[in-house]
Length: 136
Image (cartoon, rainbow, N blue to C red; front, side, top):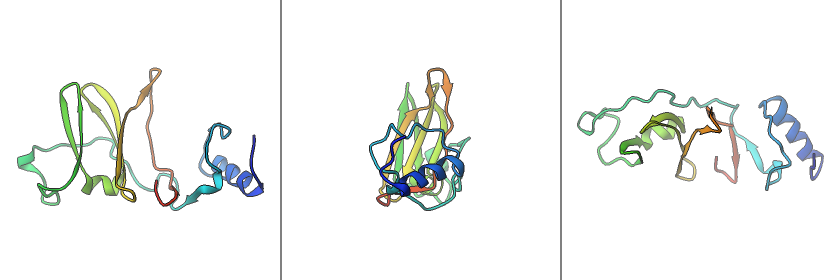
């Protein structure tokens, strides 16, 4: 394993023991010391079974003009309100028959969506509790 110094080597060991990472740390483009530990791993609960309402029946805490992450897979439309994603950051869902993950970083206001079945294996994601340059 290649590390730039003892601090980076110590960070790698901490990621393995405390966070349980089983990652090949040779496959990276940043130094491990760029990662700041902000919260314990999985401190923020993902939404694993989202419930959806029609636009006309949205709860009071969701305003009709609030921004959402919109996703369409195979003709199945979903809207994930940022008011919820800001608190949970991760949603595991099935949309249009495809198992997906929706992620949101409230620090940099960025959302990403991915299929979460790879080579027949369904992946479940959690928060690392770490930041790099003040973003997740």
